[in-house]
Length: 158
Image (cartoon, rainbow, N blue to C red; front, side, top):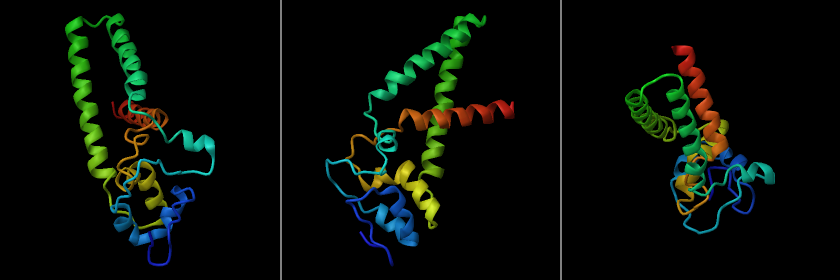
């Protein structure tokens, strides 16, 4: 697990180590480690818990949020066909945005310390540890931050 001058110690928290790999990061992150164990990302237990999520937590949190927004749309006076249409269109837009994030942000080639660190945290870990069942989905805290940023951007745009 070595870069040109740096070796990642898999027994220590990984996130702030991978940035030191520089240009060797791309090769390192695309050489998977197949294990059932979930690697440690942060020294802080609080930060660590924010990076681990079982898959079923995502619908458990976001389905009620979506249902609340749908009910608010209906109570605002929109007709049922309008609410259904907005829900379907919104689902397609969000799916397209997720694809764009994945294609153009999550698979960007990085070389600098902070770019490598950010990439590993948001997506590189998925390639390095493909069997890590606790990091298959974006944790709700991270997703909420992204959703708020998208909403602010769309609000400013419109």
